Length: 184
Image 1: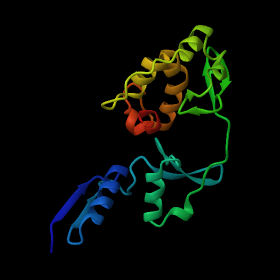
Image 2 (image 1 turned 180 degrees about the vertical axis):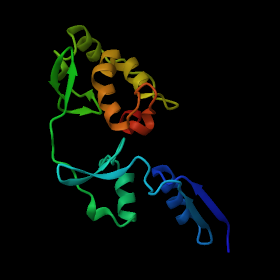
Image 3 (image 1 turned 90 degrees about the vertical axis):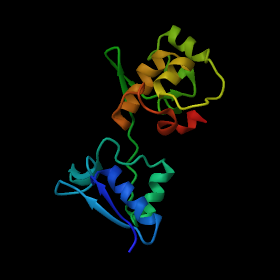
């Protein structure tokens, strides 16, 4: 018998670690230890409006290929259901604004699409994007967007979206992990 490895905690990180370890070597015995009555941590299934859905800080972002590959590896690919399209909105200045079309996690492709939500000065700052040298190391999403597009884009567009998707502060989240398309 090979080595025995214990993974403590059956939340999503512990489950992912146990899965990777189990596939790493044939002679590795992986034991998962979980204190609660179920695995999954904050991710679980709840009934909302009569329909069972996955809930949590980030159930699954279906555009992440590694998440979809893992679903397939686990034999769950056929169970993935994409939600119906619903219009997202942003509340700013006491008003509800539709989420501009063609954004990448809140970063607009067309600065004019956010005029009104952003002031004229803020749109002008966005238009005057400061493109720097390629990144040598990872940075926080908020810092990257602040530096290149202005704080208003971070505060009014990126932060509300990332707070909902990742349940975190954009000025603390990794650009490489959160929005890899901007990191490239």
